[in-house]
Amino acid sequence: MAEVQDRILNLINDGILSSIELISEKVGVSPEETVEIIEELIRTGKLEGHFSEDQKRFFKAEVKLSDAPAVPREVKEPDFIHYDTRPGKILILIGFMVLIIGGIGFFMFYDDVIAQERFSIISLFGVIIMMAGGYQIGSRKTP
Image 1: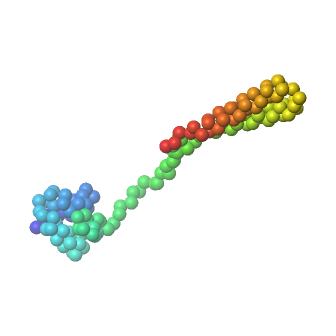
Image 2 (image 1 turned 90 degrees about the horizontal axis):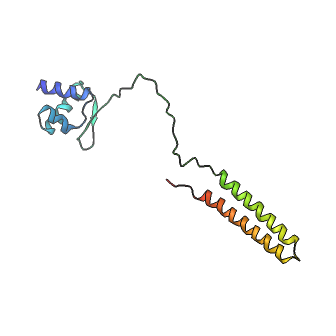
Image 3 (image 1 turned 60 degrees about the vertical axis):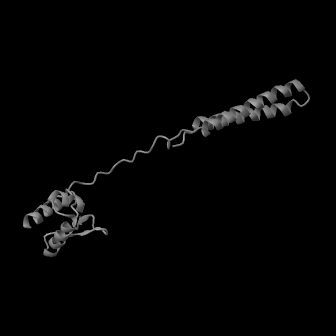
């Protein structure tokens, strides 16, 4: 029995296993006997820890902290978070300026129908350029 206790103690202290079922398979006794042996080791003070609620795992009480210093990790954000909207904003701004120029020209030549038609076409191009800028901003890939 002392040999079984030593093997269980070694398996738990080395941090190899915490599952009662795996410990019992390694040692060659039933899981119930393994739980009883671990409880006896806890009572004698050779082992410190606790069982899970269903008694299928045993957790040691002490946690070994590493002596290595904590290394801060850089969090690399995914590529889709960084999205350059400047080209779309520039297109919208250019389209708005073309639209304003077309509108001003349209009202400047209120007596010339041909000029009004040409400035209406220019205003339409302004709207199309603004829509292209909006599409460029809105076509961002989602994760």
